[in-house]
Image (tube, rainbow, N blue to C red; front, side, top):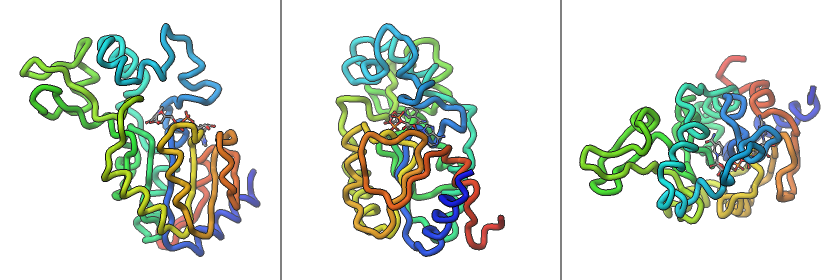
Length: 246
Ligand code: NAD
């Protein structure tokens, strides 16, 4: 399956020396973390509020307990393991072919796979801070807390995750724009490209090869040279990285 597309992708990767990967929730579905917009994604499940409402700053402030109920059950998968997509991107970085992974994901799986330069546009479930005193808490503390996670000082612990209505970190934006702007190849994968400003950063790409690996067509037409409509772990799992074995 997809023999022609995979051969073309291999060719592009072989002749590239500064690949940047831009991804989203679809990268982690093969690790059994649901995305938002696939047919079986969280947006198709029935809640009293939409996921977009729940994962917003206003909702966090007004309905903190309900926020945490959803967040802990639907967005924190601490047992999840990196899949072939995460692993291949880490291999490409080790081989000196890939300079950065830019992700909208908050699950930390790229780092778990060994990727070093990872720009997390939307933060991470693995960093949590007390809103009163700034004390740090890890993900298991939040996950295991009964109800709202509280600091020893009594303050509410908030994930370092960019909720709707909140701004992105300025340094992460700068790093993202710089990496995309100098890449020779941009691979976009596992993202619907509907969440802004994240989806707009790909417009800084000026390189030679633009590739999309996504099960369904993203919301934006990006003018890709190669489009592979298949599971990204399966696709990247078949790529050979020089010096990294088969
Ligand atoms: P999205 O849910 O809007 O879209 C996911 C896209 O990935 C869809 O187009 C779908 O067709 C595609 N897809 C799903 N599985 C795939 C696979 N195995 N291979 C290839 N393509 C696949 O995701 P988004 O664009 O990242 O936007 C959702 C927002 O929700 C992000 O901002 C992210 O922060 C957050 N989110 C993160 C996680 C996570 O950290 N794992 C999970 C859910 C949501």
